[in-house]
Length: 215
Image (cartoon, rainbow, N blue to C red; front, side, top):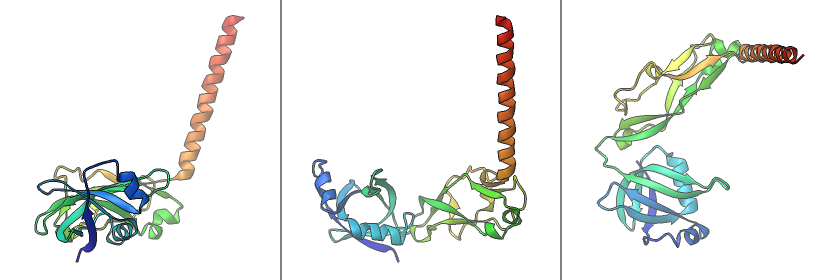
């Protein structure tokens, strides 16, 4: 069952937004209906609902008594105090597949031979666009890293665990594209040091050459 959130409709004006936020309210917009709905809700309750439901799960919005299933389209955050300043919802139908963003979580790396060799895993893709009915949208997708063993081992889109009823939104997605890869931090540090030494040698040679030309 979708988490519920109560909202009230608000007037179409930007002059009152600062006052609303100061009063502990969050302005929001609901898209996907005949006309976008401007709304407002209590900050503490809204933040709790988003935290419990997750930013990737459907919410049942109660807008002045009118219920509407929706997913979070975007959340604007104040870069200074990290408080939510605006939310965009997308109205959805319970029986129609929708596209949403699902975070990718790597699991079991600590059990891998790579971890035992003190290698490190670098995740280069944090989120994936998926398509599913609202009730089947995953809160996250997992990648099992337990079989990684050597530097340069990789996890790709083909390794994703897609739950039943969930598909990648991009039908043309390259399934061999890398999501995470293993590297040896010690080896990379040595390689960088060698490059720095080589660069210093080149600079020294160039400096000597220029000095000889001026003599």
